[in-house]
Amino acid sequence: MSHAGMSHENALVKGLIVRLGGDAAVCALLGDPPRIHDDPPDEAVLPWLRIGRSVSRPVGADGGGTEHRLGLTCVSGFRGAEEARAICAAIRVALEDAAPATDGVRTVSLTTTSVEVFRSADGRRTYGVMRLRAVTEDAI
Image (cartoon, rainbow, N blue to C red; front, side):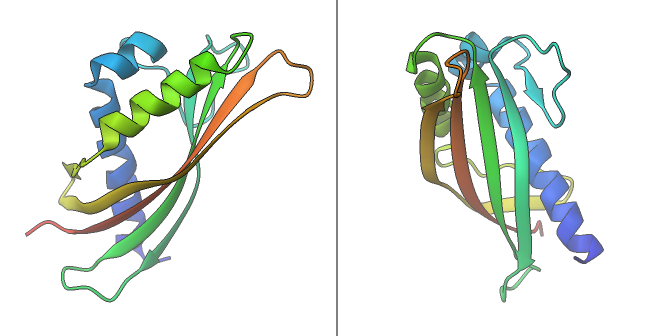
């Protein structure tokens, strides 16, 4: 991946974290500031959100466009799926029509492509996995 692609990916993630941190519903569920981790500590306070797997590739667009596929995973210790569903819904609403511009990169498209909520095998945690698609380009 080119250096520009990594810059776009880093700028997108930074913009998402800023956007989520400024949303009252997200903060009500994940804390203020929200518990968003790249690599959560072993004893991370629940619930929390992990920005996980991402794939980026250049797209043929003016302005050096990059397409990103991102996975966000929320982890809840609540018995049942209500908290994980609420977190996913709050994140989806917070990111709806979001066009974060960070570090010389602007987001021209950001959509949630899927949401899956499921319990761990032992029933002690519930996971909400969101898949996002974004397109970024150099800010002019």
